[in-house]
Amino acid sequence: MAETQSRGLVFAGKKRGSGTDDFDGDDIFVAKKSMLPTMATESDPAAALANARHEFGEHGGVNMSIEASATFTVMEPETMRRMFAGELGPDRDFFIYSRHFNPTVLNLGRLMAALEGTEAAYCTASGMSAISSVLLQLCSSGGHVVASRTLYGGTHALLTHFFPRACNITTTFVDIGDLEAVKNAIVEGKTKVLYFESMSNPTLTVANIPALSRIGHEKGTTVVVDNTFAPMVLSPARLGADVVLHSISKFISGGADVIAGAVCGPASLVNSMMDLHQGALMLLGPTMNAKVAFELSERIPHLGLRMKEHCRRAMEYAIRMKKLGLKVIYPGLEDHPQHELLKSMANMEYGYGGLLCVDMETEERANRLMHHLQNYTQFGFMAVSLGYYETLMSCSGSSTSSEMNAKEKELAGISPGLVRMSIGYIGTLEQKWSQLEKALTRMQDGFLLNKN
Image (cartoon, rainbow, N blue to C red; front, side, top):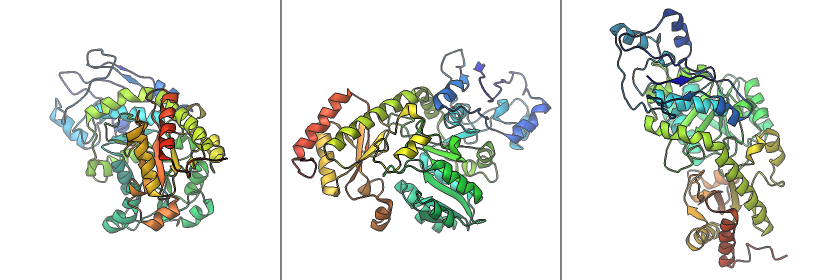
């Protein structure tokens, strides 16, 4: 049987014997109370990850085994009844079906909970499935959400079009930096969720997480933060947020080869989402594949190292590009509107984020820049997504924010020529900078260069 090593308040790791289903009555209440692990928090996400339980392989391997089974057997008929009644669960190593719980996926959930400093976490098949499941769990028909007007285009479409039509859930979009407007938009007793991104996609606006969390809690709402752009850099739950969401496909995966998401939050919420009768995760079924969970579990330990290099290069490029006269948006620059705010919230060892934006003002100029960067100098790839080891570039208004209409983009601060760059770390910094400089020279456009 698999050996386990416990470093925190996690599953006890007790394994059932081969002859009978081994359980005792004293643990039934624990199983009912929480089907997911509770994690102790650390101020530094890297320290928290190091303190998370290490799961060993079936035969003593240093890496955990992959539990690829869709269904699980029991030795006694009574055991199955008790599992479906909620009396026995994965905290005692009792599993029913991998849409409910899977040991390999749960291990990744432990790591995500440690990363974000939350009681529990559940990993899903995509970032959008994590977002939609949380909102559907927290909001019923007639419910109301207050959200930032600058969001990923898919999230904006979900709130603007799908939820009102399919679920009778409405959303008021606000400037998340205007705290008074946020407060006024929340309708006590009706607004269930205050939703925003820690760093907005694509404009890199930084949210005042502590202040927004206080406002949300004073008004009785659940504060949900998408932290996809800033893992390790920001820890929203440690700053007051209730729920932290991720598209694991991005920085956490790092390989642009996996689609996955995560919900990190209170054990009570995550457990409710897995309820057999009312749970959004249980009933909608955005199940993560165990093989994907294993892959991701092997990548999280070096997330901190990768983020440091993403952020270091983004900072250096931003400084140099600004000196060339480009209109650069990067939270690490002192002229960024939320630079000081980010400094006050961030885990500074990891920098200011791995993305920067260059505003070329028109889509034509943006496309020319990306064309030269990819096809002439090989600085990066024209592609959506982020967190890859190569630099990825896209013109946000016509790609990842294309679900928004012209007025919505204007309100969100997304100009037609805004180029979003997820800065990679392949090659040397000077090698890649030389490629960027050559592309700028080739454009031969006086708009780009500062003639002073």
